[in-house]
Length: 180
Picture 1 (cartoon, one colour):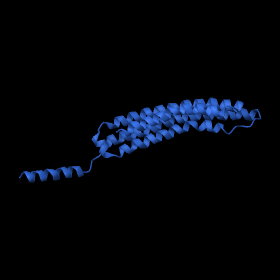
Picture 2 (cartoon, rainbow, N blue to C red; picture 1 turned 180 degrees about the horizontal axis):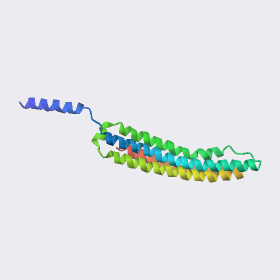
Picture 3 (cartoon, rainbow, N blue to C red; picture 1 turned 120 degrees about the vertical axis):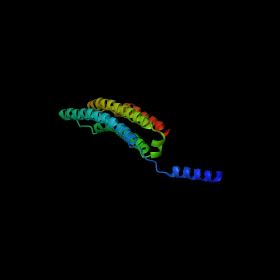
Picture 4 (spheres, one colour; picture 1 turned 135 degrees about the horizontal axis):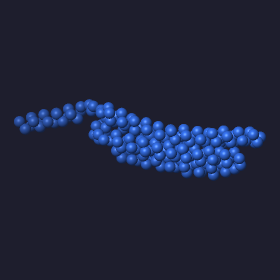
């Protein structure tokens, strides 16, 4: 009799293990919102930073034309520098979206959406602020380089320092997300 009960228990456990996990769509939606917040906030900062740097580049080119000086093409590099933070936000978005596709993870850790939401929001805002300040630094660089024609490498190094904040945020977010 006990062997029969043990066999029935084993069969029940096997059936339960093989059962399809029903996803929690509310939690999945929250994880997708977390994923998009990462790229969304980063893109807001990139748009603001690229807009500020772009306006400065256009103004610097106008000054060059007015003074019959050659307009340096390198100003376009300054204008586009803040766009990389959007790419970093996209990388975090894809990592978080991978968690949303794992029904086992979501079912086994019901509150995990909150971790993803905080990582998405805070990393997106941090990368966005980095892009904003990089754009403002790029605007000053565009003006200085157009006027003097000197210091391009030094100005790029400053933009790289500002960008390092976004790279650190992305790297630490990846490390944190991989621990779940």
